[in-house]
Length: 296
Image 1 (cartoon, rainbow, N blue to C red):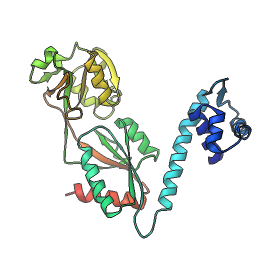
Image 2: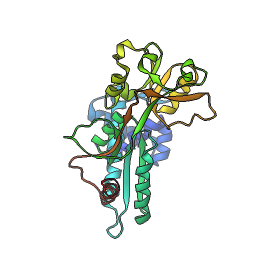
Image 3: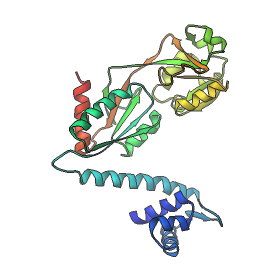
Image 4: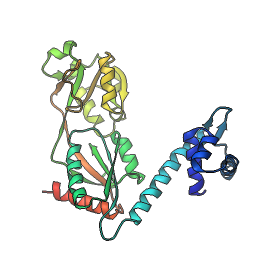
C-alpha cells in the first residue's frame, strides 16, 4: 500500500467521481481506475461502489478513508518537522481544544513564541475532550487543551491557574429565568441538552451527574451536542436547556440568557501531552514557553 495510491483513493472519495479526481491528480481516468482496482485486489475487499453518477464508499472504504487521512496527516507533520531549518525554529504545532474563553491564555503564549520565531505555524482543531484525546493518542496533534480527570500513566499535564463556571443556557421568557440561580431539582423533569462528552461520562460528565443527583436514566435527555453554538439554537427553539461553561456565547441582545448553578460547579483546564512524546523543535519551544508562563 503506497502513500501515492492512498492519496489517489482519498481524492476519489472526496470528489465522488473518477473524472474529477483524475483531473485534480493530473492522471488519465483509466490509470486512476486501474490503480484503485489494484488497491481493492491488494486488500481483497471492495472499497468503492461505482454508481452511474457518483462513487460511494463501502464500509471498508469508509474505514480506509479515515485511516488514510490520519496516515497522510502524520506523514505531512513528520516531513515538516524533519525539513525545519536548523538556524531558526520553524514548523507546525497542532493543538486540540475544547470551547473555553481561557484558551486565549494558550494563544497568548503562542503569539509570543511566534514573535520570536515567525516561521512557526499553529493549527487549532476544535472538538470535545474525548475526540481531542483520541487525536492526541494517535499523534495527530501535539497538545490538548482539556478538562477533568486524566490518566497520569498516559499523559503529562500542566494545570492552568483559571477555572470555568457551569451555567444553564435558557430562554429569557422561560419561568426559570426569573430565578437568580438554578438548583438540580429545577431540572429533574425538564428536557436537558448535554454535551456528548458529558453523556459518555468521561472527564467532567460524572461531576455534572453528581450535581444533578440523579442517573441519566431518570433524567429527560432531549438531545446532545458537540459544540455549544448549535446547542443554543436548540435552546432558542424550545427544545431544552443546555448546561455548559459561562461566557462561551454572548447572549446580549438575543432571546437567551444564562443562570449559574447552585451549588456552583467550577472546572479547571489543563494543557496535556503524551508521555514519551517525541517533540519537534517547534513543539519543544512551545512547551518551554507554556511551562515558563504557567509553572510560576
